[in-house]
Length: 492
Figure 1 (tube, rainbow, N blue to C red):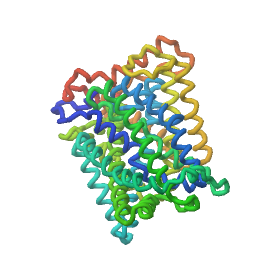
Figure 2: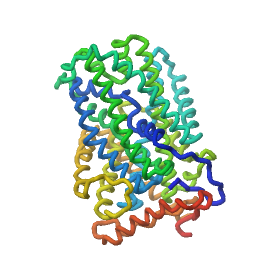
Figure 3: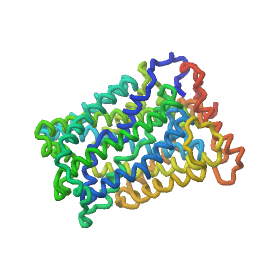
Figure 4: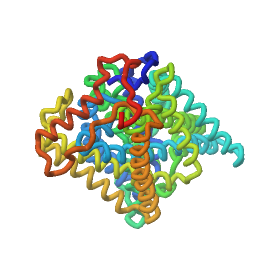
């Protein structure tokens, strides 16, 4: 699907599809953006050993399964609805709406970090702004980056390519300069008394998640069934290398007793101690620019997710309305408003809240993947994980265990906030369903109603439901964007 979503009478918007390299860069920024932010894993891990093991093991147990599932299901459902479509095919539109809402809330929380972190890195470089000007700067940054998103996803992808090269460039110099100073024994350092389990797991989880976010861009990709798997696997290698190589260089070159100093932004100090002031400034500039790339990638994913949900008839059609640049104008504005509202929260609060909400959504995604494998093994999957249904289900066990671990370590406040978000999602679902019956708001053709979603349903009904979802999602493959029908309400 190319994200038709047009409203009757409109001319098709101008769009340039994403190719492999810009998509790799966008996935890289959806997940990582560079080693900025991994520093706290050294402090919380009580030394270098645990984070090194974490970035060696967790990509295999967590990132790779999530990336594989994203590659398989994005090729089967090449639509901007992404994981919302997967959950809808497996469990119906109600569950899909709630997952979409929680994942959008998680993504908006995540994006609220980046304008603030951008200013934090400038402050560490000596450019500190007083409180009123700082708030104004957050507003200006958010507005400017939002405008770049509005101008087109192709432009965002090209800028992400440039930002990827610039953000990683100082770590090439850091690694080369660190080699003569590295002492491998420092990689084995760990102080059990200094370990902070909640901080460590939240840091690791945050730095290795969001692989499925890129699935909401599948409708904007050139030949998504071929391009998407290539981009996902290319991004896996880039992310793991961007974390492990600077971590090995920094912890191997500095004394082990500096572990307590490894907090957010410490890589600039690592650059100072290994290369001098010029490398510190370079790393600070790269970190600031990386936050811009992170913001752009997250906002693209969040806004196109809303567009995909509107194309499925889950939310009003206005969210599927595209600008002349092919971007979902109202979806972008909605995501930007959420970022501004949440930007007052602290870094640690945001990390824990978004991890919990993201974990809830991912549990549904893993369950949808397994259910689709068993109930519809013949579903066309241009890329298919080379495992049988039982093997695919077993692959999901380690990441589900990790999600459960992170959620169990959450604070009582996080449980309360996440419960409130879930309750808001339920209320919003019933509110939207009421609007569909009033005819006050336009909705695109909705997904067929939930008629079986239970263990007692027959296999033929289940297969038919998946095909119904695919038919709705992929119906615009051969229909011009300006000719898509828009029913006013369910009653019509």
